[in-house]
Length: 490
Image (tube, rainbow, N blue to C red):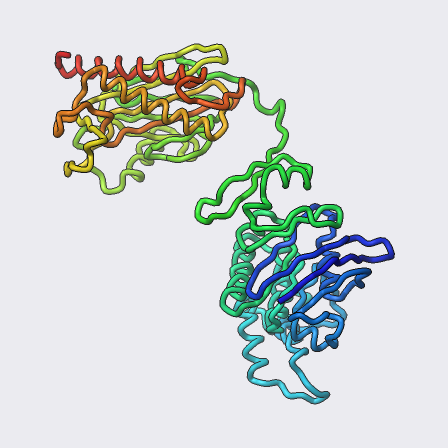
């Protein structure tokens, strides 16, 4: 649909963009990224003919763009520049209607029903219909931006060139606008080339990304191949971290600012724990990076308070999360700062251990009851309804863990728990085989992200050894305490 070959050009004899080559298919959305001054907008202006090219070609439908007249070109390509100059005052509808100019023929051409429909739809798409009779200069910058996008859409060209289309827009209108543009590409086969300032938005809405650096292409490809920590870090000279979007297979980028001196070094110790018959809690002054299977705030996050709450074995509630939130709030816990778990075990029998290694310390908290023990290898044959979890495990690390170490720590802790059940000869009451846990056990791994970097937490690593030993030790002691409280004999 559009092909750029060995393109160079800019504002003077010295090219700003150099030897640029790429092609874009029908219905594809290509995002152009790069730091300030890298040549993004200049490239778009050369493609659109606003700036002259010094070398190379721009082909549209396999023909050199230079062979098209101005009106022919406008029927093929709609352009949204970064800045707009207003020589005259127009209403919003009149401004959008200017997009139909390429479709007019003759000096006294009439306004057709197709023209009216295109303008109406474009205003609806961009949410500016209610302003149709308002002079454009009375609108805010963001509202004006949406009007000019509507003008480009009303042009109904098969190629759309956009220079930072979300400029001045709030997040709701950014989403609405980019959803509209993406819909045009999918449903109408419109080819879109857009300059983006926001890397995350570009990743979400583009099929491919072209990353520029100093007037040249640094890399081009799918978002997952362009938005890489090393690539973005080098081109933008910034520390970044990439991670997957929670709903789409697209990478998202997070800046890593320098904050040395803002966070005071700290460690967690046993004195931070409080144990009562109602709950076990851990409160710290600075948030810990946490991954858990909790009721309140499960998954990955940063939290200062941790609660393992005792509930009756027959606890039954339609909305467990809401009830747990109410429990925490009534006791003064800030919901966005707290991880909350439930256990049917009496929490006053919680076992807490502090284990020291060369790198620092690991704290383990376990509440363990085994009346609802399950052999996971035989669970397929079970039909009993699950009960409130009885083995809850916390692992608190005074150290700095990457994400893979959090996952390894979960594996190591689970293996240690299973071994403790084997040692204590805890059996699944339905199958008679050795149990591996209970039906709804919960696990939490948290780290201060201070001190020594601990890249791994497998069972033979320094961190893994402490986790394995500590979880095994505390689980054994917690099971013994549970049996004693129940009057069971080993």
